[in-house]
Image (cartoon, rainbow, N blue to C red; front, top):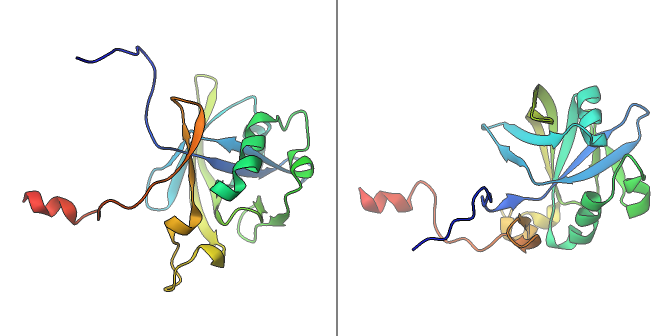
Length: 187
């Protein structure tokens, strides 16, 4: 027997992205966003409400960064989601450190160990939101999250995800299989 939850959408895990932008005056801003995904080998897609300062900045600057939230950045990440950039300077209030990207017109937040630098390809308006598709032009990873081979180590990152069922954050879990290999057992 199954219980119906009507339109309750449960697609997990939802990433916790921190979107970094500059406004028309070159002032950095950041927002917490969970509605995004990789949509190609070098492209990402995000959905963002038009009323957000970050949305206006993306439309204006055609660039943004995506920092992946981690266990160690949880408090700052949540703050970036509960405060409005239209009302407060979130960068100043949070005390994070900004570095200008060398590749796109957007800020990099030093406290986050993994950041994607993104250049807008397309913006579509749909149901009061913008659907933004962007090219990832560079990925920056702090050495603290690299393995001995110099590759990004997901376990070291301790990425958090948004649990929309309980409105909580969870750490992305352990490796349980090998993609493009384990399914061969069925052949």
